[in-house]
Image 1: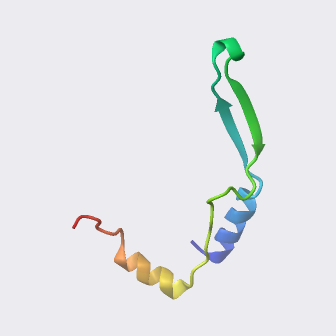
Image 2: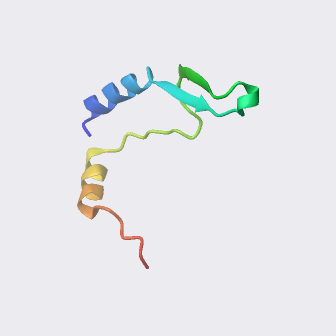
Length: 67
């Protein structure tokens, strides 16, 4: 991905909202629905890599995890 596209993607992602349906027992009122800012979710990370590293990794392709 070009750096310009990655920056634009990151900016768009920073405006993302998360929809979540939380299931509750019927006696407790049934499911509730929530929409909230995603922000930088815990466990989410993004890294910018150099063009040369990208090209090398692209040549390597998908890893074969069978051993």
